[in-house]
Image (cartoon, rainbow, N blue to C red; front, side):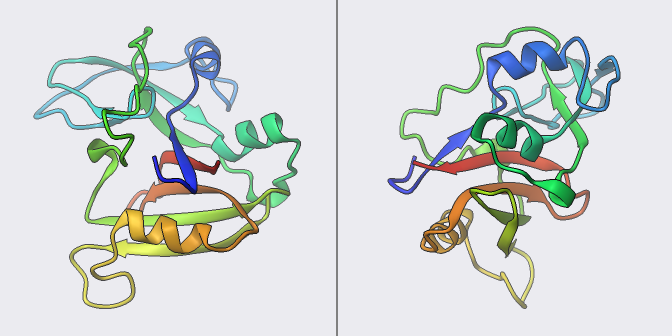
Length: 172
């Protein structure tokens, strides 16, 4: 964990709800990981194993955050697919150092910053393979730059190709 923000997996109470009915009103979709595994799990911020049983659910991270903080995301509210364990896995312990979880890293990520009121404030592209904007920028450096702005209350890390929510950070 940085002194500016904390890294957060989906909390246990929310996971319990998602395992019954997701944020789009659907029952979780059971999935068996095929091939080499490696799907990002938002419950424990790890990667799936080959043959592992997972649950695919719709999740509204900004809506959940807004409910806790009394923010109003309005048109910025999004619902998207995430993989979670179908039962309690113990969650994410934060790792020994509290550093950004390696399982949520990738060559291309986007960081979206939100104000305490729920409006999008800005973002950063992280592109480990590119030569343009975001090339060579680490997730940690991108988060640090965004949290330099005192109006930033939360930053979501997403995959670029699919737009999937990966992990939430919140100002401490």
